[in-house]
Each structure stands twice: as C-alpha cells, then as structure tokens.
Length: 198
Image 1: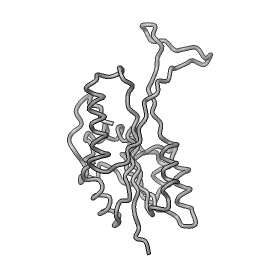
Image 2: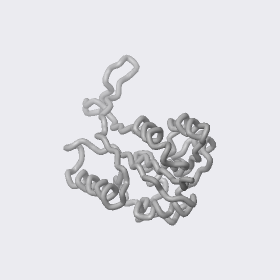
Image 3: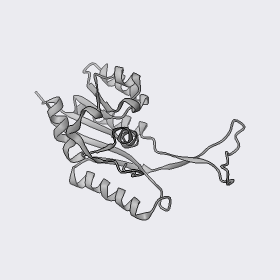
Image 4: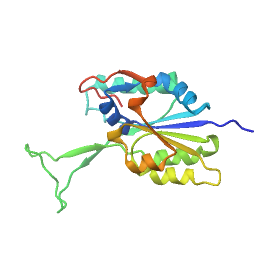
C-alpha cells in the first residue's frame, strides 16, 4: 500500500492579506515539517503561486529581492514556484469610459490571479497525494475543493488563512480550517510597515 502524502498550494497574493492581519510573515523553512507533523504524513510537494511586478513599476532592488526570495524557495526549499507578471487593469465606468484620477491619469489596479493554474496542478497531481492543504481564503476555490472531496477516492482538504481573509464558504466547504494566528510554529519575523513580501 502506498503511504499517504500531502500537497500544499500557496496563493501568495491571498497570503499577503493574511500577513497584514497577522502582523507577521510565514517562516517557509518550517512549513514542510509543520504540515507533516500536523497531518501525520510526508509532504509530496509545496506549490507557491506568485505574480511579480513589471520591470520599471517598482524600485529595481525590490524586484531583485523578490526574485532572490523565489529562487530560495525553489532551490533552497524545493518548492514548485509558479509565477507570472502582474497585469495592469484600467478601470472603466458604466459607459465604458476610462476612469481618471485627479491628475487626469487613467486609474488602474494590478491583478495576478492563479485560480486556473492552481486548479490544473491539483488535477494534474491528484494521484500523488491524499490530502490537499490550501493557503488561501478565496471562495473561487470552493468548486475545486468540493470536486476533490467528492471523488470516488476522495481527498481531504484543509484551509489555512486568517479570519478577515477567508470566506465562510471555504471554511465550511473543507474538511478543516486553521487560523494562521493559531499557528505560531510557522510564524516568522514581524511584518514591517509598508513591506511587500509576496
């Protein structure tokens, strides 16, 4: 009989919101051992999904720091890092016209959505794990979670997030929910004001 394994899926954009609520970062060097101990099985793989800013939109040293961090996750900790460039979405009013700010420039926001990529990886690697652990609070994942929990050979699904960042549907739709506030074993350093770590 094949021993059970765990797959971990980290939505970095959503996790950033939890960092702000938590006031701390996650120490990823402790994550694999923490998950293995909590669920009593080895970790098959940790997937980390992150959108990075376009060149020229942030100070070069900030972008370089992010890429070094992602290299550490990949090479140092063995994470599977899935990344793509942030998209700029220009806001429009109900008539379809660009919304302008007070200086006359088009208002915009950045978006880096990984719903499809996470879903593909869950389905692609489903045979390799028995338990899926999601670090997200996004209710968009509820159909995926319901699907894998209701297979002929169902998977267990657990959610890690914080109270203000998780949807009620996701909390009740999984096999269990863990608030990151209650997981000091993986807390890292304090979140510095205006710090952006993805």
